[in-house]
Length: 276
Figure 1 (cartoon, one colour):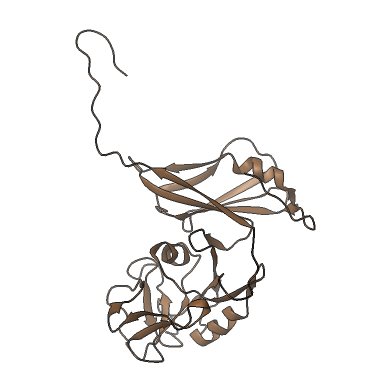
Figure 2: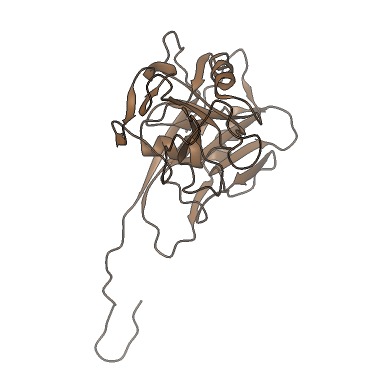
């Protein structure tokens, strides 16, 4: 791959490579191979992300990162790995999903209300893109923005307008009904038994780790609880798709398709000799 740097800012401090689709936590891994004296790296299993960074702390020429990226390897500890993995490569820290071409960031803020999070997300930008509380429309988006996020928190769904009618009320999907009276209309990733409206709960929240299915959703009141698993720990901001957003060229992706081995025929030989 080639990185074409901005002439006004030609040096880079880091590059981020993530298994953005199909990630199998606990078995998939990215590693840096070869000798790269100017590059250090960290692998975070929870997010499925490999960070390449300048080992000196000083910005480096893009070509140094290009050489390193070409030696990154994918490994799996599964006996017979299979399926599709999509890898995103970007110069920014936010998670990038190629299928939406959007970016996702978890912002930690313990105890923040949904209303406060909505305003904070709308006030944030990322390389010029307008932020909003995440609106999630597919399984790969749910996994990257929830299960592979750096934390759990508020997203942009609410049934405050009409009980039981869940809408996205932020971003370009503002007004879209995604769950109505117990039935999924577009896509939903509710935890088991949710939404249950236990105590006037009108706002969607990605569950804390260890609460049901990782990355799934539950409904909370505007404040949530004041401690424990149902206390808001922050919020998830999505960037992309808003009117006036600039066209960015800071990310790319590639895909690895691993065929599934259905059966194998053992090699055989009649008489003396060996087989391989």
